[in-house]
Image (cartoon, rainbow, N blue to C red; front, top):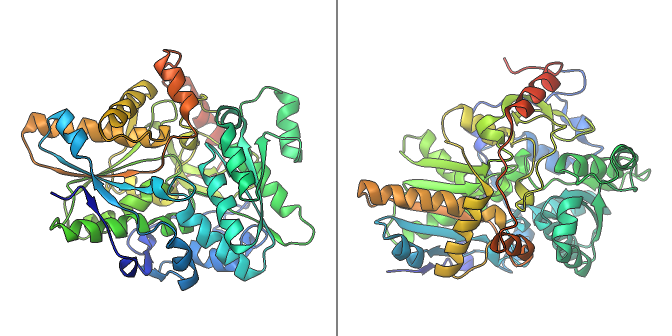
Length: 453
């Protein structure tokens, strides 16, 4: 029995998989409601990343310089959760791709490093970004330190307060981190004037980061996003591509079930898209994106065009959304508190390639405790959603008496998230279920935006 399955450095994937080659996607729209001209993104992104964003080429080469930076932790291990299996008394075999081993402690450097590298090649001097739980901000600060770029991170205020050491991580790697909404941008000042105690949201932080980038008169500052966009999903597919090779090493052709937590879609797409390619080509694999019940974008959101941020500075994206003004409950899975979902993930759900699931906060923390007391790791609150769904599926396999292979992405460790664990263990956390009135409010908000035919 193999508990840990490794790849040699020579076996690291040399290409990313672009699912846009295999599904019919709808174009993003500009302010005039017409398909976006890629050139119009040039004020925000470097052209080399814009080319990836709009590409429908199935396989895209990973630059050798990027691979060399990946060697710090990639290929990441595939592990079998034998201790959890035993505790659940399940016939299922549970495997997980451990993305917590990166220097930043999550999957986020998989895209942060290539984005920083492509920006450096383009002549960018500084990157701005947003972060929810701080994982993306930490990863980008790390990546910028490797390639020699300045980095400014707008961190959602509630997470900024809940996870103070994420800021320290960013500073250690030379990045600047401010709480959002902030006084550093016109939009941030507007929000604070309206609500001085606003907990913030990813939509607000995105607006601030975009404003900070486009207001640089030198044009040498660009914005970077840690999720949602096509090129981010592309970079993350190295997770699933490695997992395929690792499963093959122990004689497993394919998993029966693939599970990942889903906020904007980066970690989930990373583990799932290479297997969605197999589903498109006739394989039977159940693919489950797992989201918070308090922010149920895929399970209860509206599939339409919406802005990716609160100020309406981004293009209109075809996605599942709760409305760009939606302010999620301050749950501790800060990385999953986003109103929209990746257009590529959204399209896959519409096409029936994936079956989304929403799970409440307390069940996720119970799953995290079960994981800690069996497998040993203290995992990120975001990852606990994937573990909760994995436990559900393992127990279902037990009821059915079926030997299923479950593959899960463990998106990151929870060493910076212990405040959430403390509140759970002391009984201070509660479940949040999104009220139907919020869905109706979103529908009205979206009425005047273009609709998906």
